[in-house]
Amino acid sequence: MLHTRREAWARRHGRIPLIIPFSGYGSTEWTRVLCRVMLQKPEPVPSDPPTRSDRKRAKRRERLRGWRSFVSVPLNGAMVSITIDGATTEVRADRGGVVDAVIPISLEAGWHVATLKTPGGVAVEAPTQIIDPSVEFGIVSDVDDTVMVTALPRPFVAAWNTFVLDEHARIPTPGMAVLMERLVAANPGCPVIYLSTGAWNVAPTLTRFLSRNIYPAGALLLTDWGPTHDRWFRSGQEHKRDNLRRLAEEFPNIKWLLIGDDGQHDEDIYRRFAAERPGHVAAVAIRQLSTGEAVLAGGRSKPEKDIAPDVPWVYSPDGSGIVDQLDELGIV
Image 1 (spheres, rainbow, N blue to C red):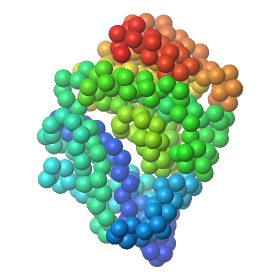
Image 2: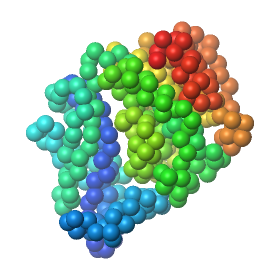
Image 3: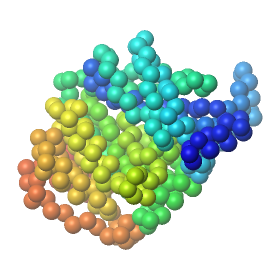
């Protein structure tokens, strides 16, 4: 009922369906398409050629503060047509307007483009990376305090993501982009997955942040914002565990390098996954927080590496130190 009232209000005030596309991934037999459908005011059509005012408006839209992303109305149950390589599939968004659909389709390895459209909306394009069956190495990385320095008390991270979402205000973790690029260069065609407990609302800003700081392109796996049937807030740990298991099932031949930090639950989540599926983990790389960051994060986790003794673990406060240790392991 709440979604219906909000949608009715949005439509009365001139909002139209807008699809926010996210990067997807898949195999040569299927692809996972991700997007979110919102009701927002239509953007003004720029002049041809664009005027100075057009460029200013575009710049303001790029630097849109996070609270606008959270108060935009998701289109509950919206129908979305997904067209890839000439084949079209109709799917329905969930109650949060999120589409997370697996499309059976035969595609060659490499990057492809899916065209997404909803009735009454404008068609948009979403990139998807198709992984070659011969690929045996992949990267899964956390985001907050791993590829970017959050430096905030954990209870305030959500508020920061909501109200101060400009990617220019974020600080990249020293050496992590270089680490990721070296890993991709050493393993051509490997998938890169950014697995975060952040809400889908922050995806456009995170995508711009990663691109601006020269992180390799990859899929973002985030969470929906809001309560579930049995709790007020969704479980970030459960979200990460479920997606790691899903990746292991989707790509049984790939061993993953799991990258995280020692200030939250990454070590425990990665340790348990490595114990359950040691054949799917190449190594675990943990960024060590500074003393100040650890205090803000609520302390450091206590590693118990003996649970998965056959999986190598490396620790360093920055990407450069992780590179050196992974080089010794023959991974870089």
